[in-house]
Length: 464
Ligand code: SF4
Image (cartoon, rainbow, N blue to C red; front, side, top):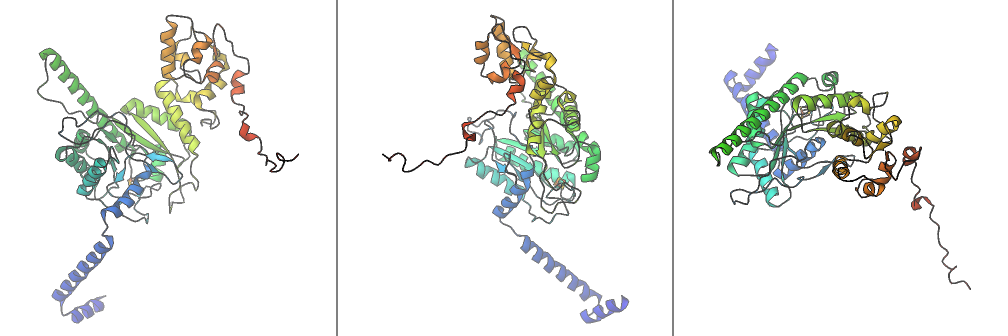
């Protein structure tokens, strides 16, 4: 080694010149690297919009209504959706979305952007994202921005970059469209507080239903840190709501407008995403996790994303994706938990899974014939909500109508709900369902298309 060093020294003319030579080499390598990495904004857009498509947690519902009718800004947050992108399996999974960068220091096995993945990398500057958002917005292509990022340098540094995009859009360009920022796990409390001042919605992905699965598939992520970030968002939202209430009280007492308008913290609340089928968690544990998240952190939505195999996937992952029907059933069950008074253990079968063949509400009704038929004129709201085919709105209308008259079959037919389905589970003064009415709903409907097509005879019609 010493001999090699002295050879280089003598060849290069001493330690000083060697040092200089090394610096030149370093500069040259850096220049070559940078040149090879030089990408146009369009190149970056192609890479980073594609990299973001696996994140499904980006519906634009629930934001504060803002518009620019006062001519002091641009855009409005009204309307649904921003832009759509499609997963490789054909699902339309997203509205507006970009990654600031797909470089990442973490190595989550299920993620196409993980450190060990050999995908092409790119990174937007803050100004590029701001300009792209404004350009698309002015052309009416999008209604807002969903911005996430791989983790570069440190979680705080990455979070600061995301916040800076939102700050510039809001404070410098007076952008009033919808902004959804992904919160970086482990980002500091102060950064989360700043993010919520500019973003309509914040989200942080729990990624997997159990801590064991997270340790196995995303070892650098920390379930406790994710929960802490969610807790911080919830606390900030609560405080902001309290401030607003106090402000409204002052307004009422003073009989006028409050002098200071309190900025609402992330008015569209927080959401999260869980990947389904990357580990062997049952639907029961997924729904239990969701129920706890809704309860503890007052999430607006838990999004379920069926695992679809990614390029160059780790051998620790399944080689086939989870069925999309499973994702669909989880969304249905999630809805039943939140708005229909069901408990997660009521919805799953003995093996802990939801039925793929029928929706969870129908599956529950078929498994509990003792509760049916339900008397529409006497049943409590909670029981009416459990009747397959009756939604929250239909039940509200039924309850209002039956206060003034006895409901009959024709009233149910006028509800706009799927009549055959409802009538199989309810009784009315002029209707009682047949014993097997519910079972018959599951029989395949004979269709004219099922008869095999017949080729007509070209000459038959003209034959004498
Ligand atoms: S931290 Fe996010 S971007 Fe990075 S590997 Fe994990 S999931 Fe992918």
